Image (tube, rainbow, N blue to C red; front, side, top):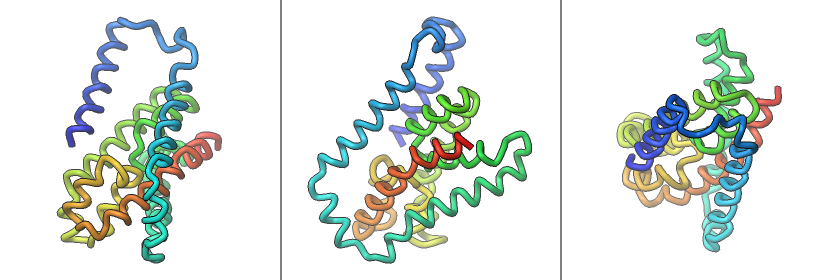
Length: 200
């Protein structure tokens, strides 16, 4: 929860700095967002590659749980497709691009800003932060109402990092590996899905 509030705080700070013109406009700062994106992808790869045990744990995972990331991705994209009926001013590809962030707000918002502009990038940032906050606050209720896989699916790409402690408490230690595996696969899908739908 604290991490999400920090991110929201930086987002609000960015708005204030942008409105007051303390920094030069992004158009005069070159490829800052692209370089930031490259740094984020490098850090994610480094963290995954640095954990020697993670691949051993994945091998012991129940094969049925391996379908969970696929169901999360399909369910999210189906929900986004339905959303276009409620948002006629947004195209199907835009809604799918925003949903493809899967809670990975830092990466998806930068990508979408690169392809579609800051307006949709801001929507992606807020939508994915809200997804994480819903997971952080609602995990115990989701477990009670829908079962232990529900908050993991709702958490999307965040289940291997920021929401993992909450999911461990709500779902139990037996689901830690499920959460990490789920987050790893969904996280890996984000740049491919976002760029695909942005290019449509």
